[in-house]
Length: 573
Image (cartoon, rainbow, N blue to C red):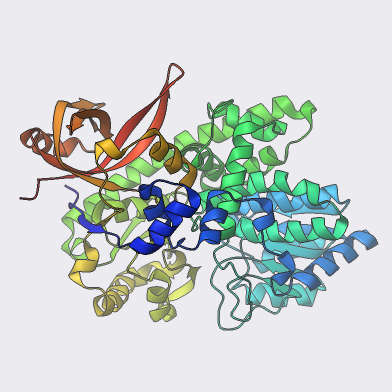
């Protein structure tokens, strides 16, 4: 059974919240939420609630943007072939799509290359540059990759190919020797927003090119696609990422769309529906990702690039193929998750450690990142999942908030042939014979910086909210805070002494549905994946403490409020 989380209430500057409430004419609940999220200043709160394209920063504030744009425009003027080198996840695919589309509209001779996970490996590789050079390419622009590709950069130089790197991953101490390196995480880059996804950095390049070409009216269409990659990459949805996500979702919901995106939405069952962060994370994103995980990412790129109505039939087939690949991905994932969980639960050498390191022969490399995320969710411990292929093993790493996975890998960098990533997610390649040593070294690092309490899950509570306080105004204002995700989590409130007046009823053998009453007001609610709590809830039906979010749903054209229960607790006395 999953460990019960520790409820921790977030603090708030009451005076700042009162000032916001008066200035913005919002409810005390919303004013408190804005302050908790670091938006206590009036101007910052207003920008958050009503983001606009004018809130995007000057792209030329990014170090190396000017030489990159100059080189691209020179290539176009000379008729040189330009290649975009992408990455195989949603972030990389959408980055490739928006930059290729922009360059085509500007009249460039442009091609793209996205490596296949199994055949080509991760990131910018010398072999790919050889292939592009042989096709007559004289300028390569990387998106969502390349920041640690020093060898590839030197190889490009030896071929006489100019290289522009755009990336958002953490750089090494020394940058690759490229013509331009655009990354807000560069130590010498004063750009105000460091949290862009790879597609966000690509969008800044598109924005710069559009400004130079006098085509700023094109930018909203690129923001729409950038929103998919931004939310799928789970970057903090604040600052420019919020502008991209909020405006992009509105455009995705409203349409119209080019034939490729339209076909994808149709296959996902989203045609004509309001699209939110859930649909990106669990419906659209997984299908785009499935191409790179299970076959070739070019399926997704070709689909999103399809703009000619004459391609409607082909676009439909591509969208259906992505859907089928996603079903195959789900099957592979379920099998590997079961094997990995069994290893954690039965092997003390794995399950007793702070960092879970599991490996399996022939595990599909396309899904081990998802498996690692599932292990983190199940055990609230950092996880490294490795697929063994002969003498080599390829790993995906996911972490918990209090553990820096990239730093852990750097502490034993000599063990691996390659690694890179972020604090919370990373990848690696290692000799299969050294997996046990990796487990020992990573855990030695973890033992030095993690306390037992760090491995207990936390449920962050935004404050008390009685049922009587959930007004139409509060519900509407909560909607205005969306989209929710990293950096802007869905608000979670607590209510004490709640009575269960209907249920709990088990739904699909996994979820609990019920109705609650507090102070005479009844609200319906659902607790997802909480079937193991059914007996506890039934025993405390007379009075139970709830941690919950407020959702607005629609049924037969009518909007209604529903509670999504994050946790239950016996009432405090």
